Length: 175
Image (cartoon, rainbow, N blue to C red; front, side):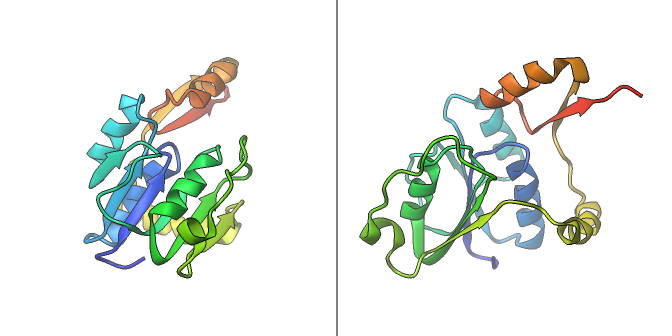
């Protein structure tokens, strides 16, 4: 990523609300467009507070093409949407272990032509964490969290599935 470019974030939960802070710090002249479920005001408000330049729903067309995008969603449709919104030579990184719905059929000319890249990332390595933690302290990263007691784990999972957690859900394990 470089200053002056456009980054698209698909899904705005635990990971993306950290990534926007890193992006804003490392590339202050970069534009950040956030795609989040239109019915979740909490996610839109948080994206706005963290400096998003534009906020829309996953199927929306942004005001500019994206130079790169990261998909944090558990479903397949945003992959196709993001590829359609990329500039020539743009890159989409899918940051998910697996999707609960299939990625819809892609049209080569619309979604892949012009040297667009698609990359997947499934795991964070120990080295990734070692490199990230000093940067997080330097920025400083301010995570938005909602704590749940261990016995509330099922409730937390339901709220996450429904997109009703602003930022990240954290389980508090008794000492």
